[in-house]
Image (cartoon, rainbow, N blue to C red; front, side, top):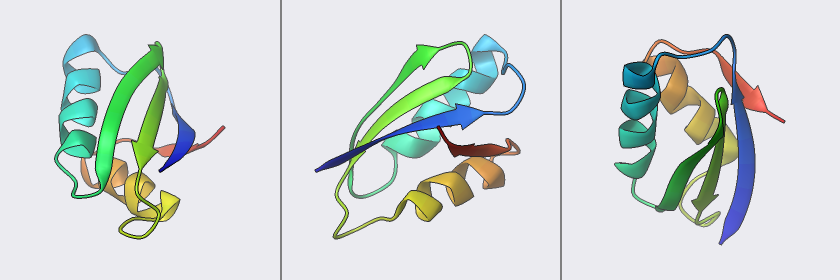
Length: 69
């Protein structure tokens, strides 16, 4: 398993952050996704199944701009 810290541009509302976490947790290959700050998420994922770009793409599909920190 790999870990990556993803930053969300701006500061999502609590509802927005929950939507982000649910979207990431719903991906096959994500074992853990947790908020580590108001606009940061730590994701543990299987690199055989997903790439960091897959994670970021999922967040963009939810309407958020994101990138690795």
